[in-house]
Image 1 (cartoon, rainbow, N blue to C red):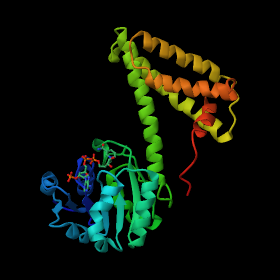
Image 2: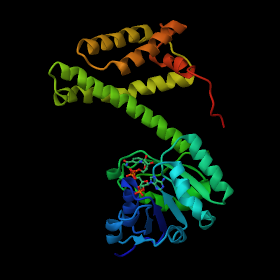
Image 3: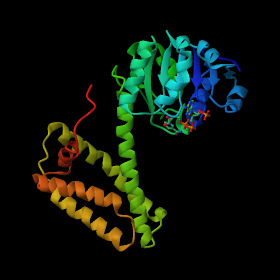
Image 4: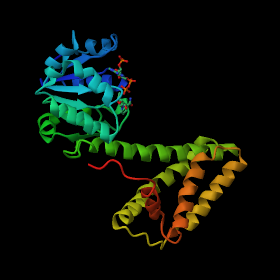
Length: 299
Ligand SMILES: NC(=O)c1ccc[n+]([C@@H]2O[C@H](COP(=O)([O-])OP(=O)(O)OC[C@H]3O[C@@H](n4cnc5c(N)ncnc54)[C@H](OP(=O)(O)O)[C@@H]3O)[C@@H](O)[C@H]2O)c1
């Protein structure tokens, strides 16, 4: 293989995503060293030109930029802890998903060991890694991001740096996954609802597509209202929306379909009405959601 880019990178963790990351670095011409806890996951990468490290320490010694992509932040730390001295002075990019608080703990631990940490969040499936539409978020050491940005571009898209607060990549990750899970559960619930009356998913899709296209505009309106703290209720109101959710609960119940998610959604709107937001717009439910419990994660 003819290398076009000699920036060296080491990838620790060769699950589905770690292999995709290593494959993208190789495809961009980077000298790529790979290591995995269990043997046998690097054959294809080695066939493509990756260097199989004889040991974890050798893997870390091979590159100034070390990437970890394993189960979670604890697994990242578990891997590197025994060879932490080898990591001193290098940049560690943690692609293992976790909470913002655990990302910060990892950064604090890294700082104590003179390791520059970037925390990363991958927002796309493995097949999109290396493609223009790849979306990968970073936060933490700005120096580390600046020095290695061009290498990280091998993963596709434009690497998004969210600032020096190490928690940010994980925080945005979880907020976007919150959006993903809630909306897709609603979508699948909708498929169950129409399916109960003999409408196939394929038949439902054209209208679902048209409806999806309306959501960005609605989200922008809600976002602006949340930032302004004003929910005028001119074009919609929470009382009407609570009634609409009750219709979904009733129709699901009548068809023997699970009602847990829609009952939960309705209870939020009912609480908003009870709290005096009945004549305000959809965005006012944020007042109910914000009041759910004490805040424990300042910093
Ligand atoms: N796959 C995706 O589409 C996707 C998308 C976005 C983000 N991610 C994130 O990427 C990370 C890796 O996901 P994946 O899909 O590659 O998972 P995976 O295919 O299940 O692979 C898990 C990897 O973690 C390693 N591992 C787990 N626990 C470990 C420990 N205690 N010590 C050392 N190594 C350990 C495994 O090593 P062994 O081979 O030795 O078991 C394996 O290399 C996760 O945080 C995930 O949330 C994945």
